[in-house]
Amino acid sequence: MKKVNILGVKIDSITMGQAYEFAMNAIRSGGFHCIFTPNSEMVMAAKNKPALKDALNSADLLIADGIGVVYASRIIKDPLPERVTGFDLTKRLLEGIWKEGKSVYFFGGAEGVAEEAKANLEKEFPGIRVAGCHNGYFKPEEEAGIVEAINQSGADLLLVCLGAEKQEMWICRYRDQLNVSLAMGVGGTLDGIAGRVQRAPEFYQKHGLEWFYRLIKQPSRFVRMLALPKFGLYVLFHGKKYLKEEK
Ligand code: UDP
Image 1 (cartoon, rainbow, N blue to C red):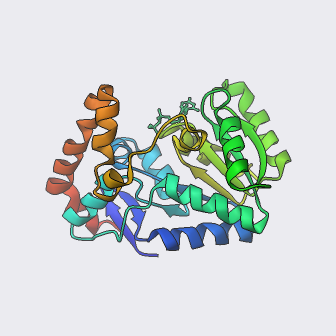
Image 2: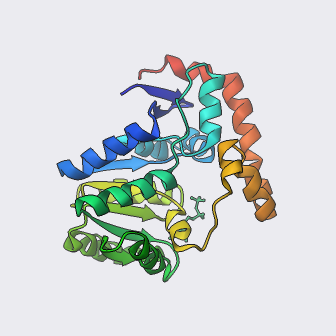
């Protein structure tokens, strides 16, 4: 698969349809696979954190969750075909596993979020097999038990929603012990499915303005969002250097 190198993070040049096929094949084939969904904040963070960069690049599929990553690929003249959000891919996969009788485990979010997500999905996809749930607030000594519970559940797909960086590092730490076929780090996806966080209306999504909608809804994100123009400028001045790196 062709990759596009954004500041050392090698994003797969793939459409939503191709990502879906890849993920469903991974779920069907058995063996461990993982998908990560970096946005520009994560790419910027990975620039200064080799462990995070290695974790991201170790994924079987790396999709451009944020529009900033897509713009960056255009700036360096190696354009990605489209934005493939973790949320949208997850929703499609949940429908896919429902049709094929595969099962999913929800790991992450505040107490009760995974169960609310499960209840909503059961309304949308009656009979969907949710093999288990665990919230995302735990002590390090509980982690072995969580891995055991996931394996005992027999889940095919594992959604890990612990927030950026924490979820990727967690999956990498336990990838050799997890018996799932596909693990995905998908941030606030369970909050979205549970209905605790509303996604931006389609207009904002279509025009690459989801960040703007979030800013209006949560002005406290302003400082965090200053990372976006900083990212754009960094890519403009230094982005091409990374293209020479080995693919
Ligand atoms: N989260 C979690 N455990 C943690 C930190 C976060 O389960 O230790 C959950 C949080 O409840 C939310 C999701 O991870 O459902 C995404 O968190 P956040 O929006 O802070 O992450 P980001 O926007 O960086 O992906």
